[in-house]
Length: 236
Image (tube, rainbow, N blue to C red; front, side, top):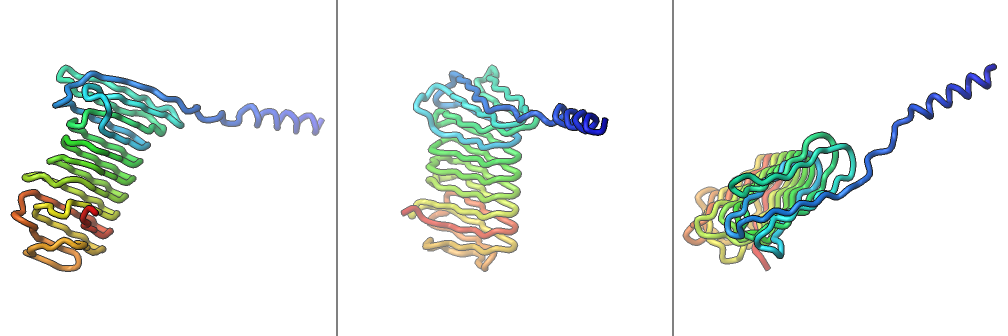
């Protein structure tokens, strides 16, 4: 009798073992937009968001790869032409999104990296846990903020442009043209400020706080981190 009871117990355990996770799947959307004034908003729970200048100037093309969990993904376009992508529920979703170069984008991820490449429109990027990497930009307005992660920016500095890079616990790096014309405010609580080879006119200068200008100071650059360091570099 005892062997039979043990067999029944083992059978019970096997039948109630958890099932495997949902297999990966890819979803795709494509929206016709204005090449000059397209807008994109993405809200993701977990996963990478990569947005880049696409080959088709009149479309936003979205590829979403779900790798686990059971997230719900929606992609819609309103009457003004703005495209919004939103993820709800639990699970990891990675996005690859091609947009017209002049698109204005607003990206939010609670956990995961944000990558923006080769755009000329306004950029807003926010991450709770993850890095932000912005490269090849020719934009007059950039705002990148993260709580736990590093922020890097490489691009042109346009006259009257505004560039804000902030992280609570991470490194800030800005790579600018050697002839960039800007006014700088850079502050860190625990790290340091490294200006590289840039020659500037200083209003305030210490290891952790710099207020300075280069040229006429036409653009505004604001760099802040609570626990990391700040690095200003010139393009090769």
